[in-house]
Amino acid sequence: MDFLVIGPGAIGCLFSARLTKAGHGVTIVDYREKRATFINNNGINLEGLSGEYTAHVPAITGEFTGRADVAMVCVKACQTREAAEKIVCWLHPRTVVLTLQNGLGNLEILEEIFKENRVFGGVTAEGSTLLGPGHVRHAGRGQTIIGPADSEKGHAEKIVSAFSMAGFDTRSTDEVRDLIWGKLIVNVGINALAAIAMLKNGQLPGIESAKAVMKDAVQEAMSVAHAKGIPLPYPDPFEHVLEVCRCTAENTASMLQDILREKTTEVGFINGAIVREGEALGIPTPVNCTLTRLVEVIQGNYGKRIHA
Image (cartoon, rainbow, N blue to C red; front, side):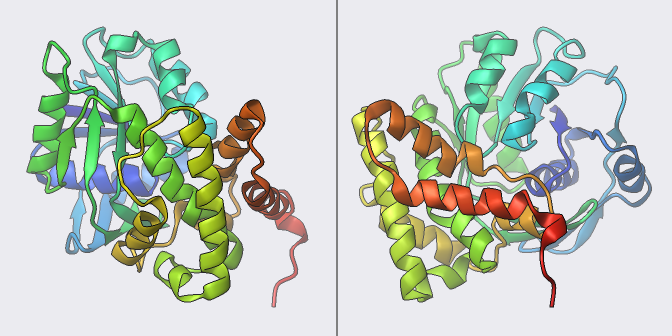
């Protein structure tokens, strides 16, 4: 298959490298010319659980004139609309669009811009850390799930097959929106706290005060999900969050990666989304509200921070 990957972040680079090594065609779309040039000259360097190798993947900043079976949107949630509006005129009508992003709202934005029957949602528990331009560490393994599965043209199963060939544990489902909420709750429990405390995933459960904050944040998100009638894909959400921490112990959460690089985070689409949904339902979410505000304070004042 031929993939157009929008965004050379940690997940975009991980999937691009593995898909290329498996023999699939991959092109990366970047908005930064200098970074795209660097990737073109040096390839994507992968280390960690996938081994160490370099995958040579073309990167572009201008219009894509080739043919892609799948456009994978891997940008930050705050960039989804802009990225989708940029690529919509590039894609063949038969090209399907897949999101593997964090947070709420990405699927709905893509369905608004593209036809609903060509948009697929996805979640991945693969852990990856961006070490530099085109340099990523595969820090944790987990399942990747996409859907809906019952596409009459079999697009989902073709993507599952391609991902599986690349070594990713992948399956399809018709309940992908429930899984997006399931992934959201994991991110609610881990990302903001990891970013504020500047700790790796695996360190959080071993600190009692951090564990207590995680539990409260997850409980608020569970209350919102239940009020919306969303069935979660695991029986004990907090225990699942702890298990994800253990499975991705050496991973640096994406929100912490953003903070370390002084970038805008996705907190508004993760913990902030729980706050907004809670307000609409009359459900208090004080812990998620505080976590959101703390991350916003950090990301809004990078230039004013005191350094040791």
